[in-house]
Amino acid sequence: MSQFDQQVYQQRRQQLCRTVASGLILLLGNEEAGMNYRDNWYHFRQDSSFAYYFGLQLPSLVAMLDVDSGEELLFAPQPSLDDIIWTGPLPSIQSLAEQVGVQKVLPLDQVASYLAAKTRVHYLPPYRPEHTLKLAAWLETAPGQVAAGASASLITAIVAQRSIKSPAEVQELHQAATYSAQMQLAVMQHARSGMREYEVAAEALRTAQALGCQLSYPLILTIQGQVLHNHFLGNTLRPGDLLLFDGGVETPRYYAGDLTRTFPVSATFTTRQRELYQVVLNAQTAAISALRPGVRFLDVHLLACRELVVGLTEVGLMRGNADEAVQAGAHTLFFQCGLGHMMGLDVHDMENLGEAYVGYTPDLPKSTAFGLKSLRLGRTLEAGFVVTVEPGIYIIPELIEQKRQEPTFQRFVNFDLLDTYRDFGGIRIEDDFVLTSQGSTLLGEPLAKTLSEVEAIRQHALA
Image 1 (spheres, rainbow, N blue to C red):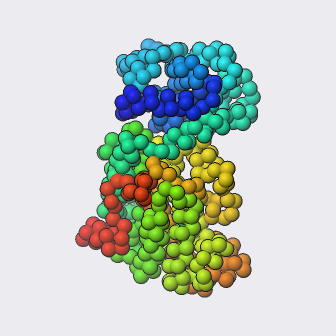
Image 2 (tube, rainbow, N blue to C red):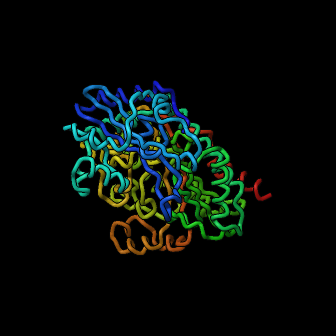
Image 3 (spheres, one colour):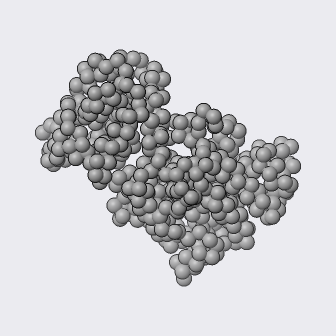
């Protein structure tokens, strides 16, 4: 893993210790995980908070910060002769630790005895079962009680720190978004009628790996764009289809990009596709214009919803007052999810720490209403936040049938016309932004998204 300068990690750890009450901070690195037997591993990915404070990519590491004494420790397994045979000689753990400013390294099997002498241990909620079992053994508690013992003060401190991206992090995210745009463009140029979705996805993966990167999440590449997280990849592209590609690249330092484009398999959009695509683009443009510190992302989301309703009304699929339609939730027949989320070392930044901490506040709890319950970010924006903006229109036949008889939807939706769109699919347009003191800035090189820009790429690719 390519690391930042030593001082970056030292300063991050010092800031964390200043904001956590007395006690010991325990951070667990991830382990290797077998796909179908122990030694056939998935691609290793370090825990993001561990990577943020310690920058080391090796598996099975445990870090501790003593808030009271200032001591910093790293616990690591001792390499064996078998390790050298299979991986070759590697730098010592001690030398790697010193690169990130940690001087004291102890054997991994001393973790339990070290923790036994501590009365207050702060740890994060585990999202991997092996972490739960380790914590249960070390802290002498039942596995079922481990999650409840996670430290709210540590979660709050890490969320506050990781939410504000430093200039170095913004540059890394800019690179991730640029690489993601290059991957998106490669797919837009590569797709052809008659291909299977997995053939197009192969070009995305090839591009990411040719850039020396991994994917920041499993690809969503589908002509069935109404399925929000569609990883099937088995459909055949046909003339007249829309292909929705939601894919991002993760840099070697683990910073994520997250972009979506929707484009025609043919050289041009159909009339209906053009109309609804422009509706989504108008909603995204309005939302981007509203991004600035001091504005709640919830309100940006609702603004985008209103713009969607205005456009859908002009097309004839909705009717009535746009504000009343959004207040009643009628737009959720077409836009069922949230406008965006925080992004950084995780594509859904710090989601493992809990949306109540990352995306919301005690004064602004997350809604349980359909549509709003899927909005991962609602809180007031601050300079240094990095967010996605990704409105969409999704025509889901099963949802149409479920909502057809409800008075709210009958009032605002033209079901007779909507029935002729049942096989339309979905459209999403997504870009990444960093909040500045005055507004926001696009991350990454701009990627084609207007109707004319997208059609120009497709016409040239198919010429």
